[in-house]
Length: 194
Image (cartoon, rainbow, N blue to C red; front, side, top):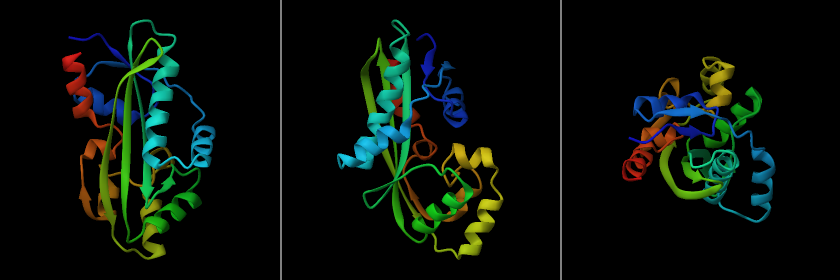
């Protein structure tokens, strides 16, 4: 079996998904300034999917440059609301605004993963899940947010599908791991054939 891979992310959820699937990994966050990259790509009218792919690759490559012959996994997830990129909230007010935007609408959650070696991407995959949010009053949304800790809110975007967030949705189509930020089955498939 493969040696430990390096996860270029400080996401506890991604680490938990890898652990659950018995993929040995050590964590080395890339600390890429995502906002600068997103702004540049948005100016170039890149789609949310392209932005997600680019960020996953950037994170993996950055760590991979200093890790000779090791496999480094980078990942990124974004919300695509009819072509509009929605990023993780920076505050509770912003989280409420995001929920109001998504309220009663269908959107895609896009998760991209990239495996790099010696500073270059050797594999990548992007998966999408489609979520339709129920229609809530602003008070309902505030109540929902009040049940979520700061750590959880800033780590997992505005909803946690594995917990309280499931109740926000009328319909969910797609892989739950993708929604949580890591399409792990495709990663597993690649690593088993590596």
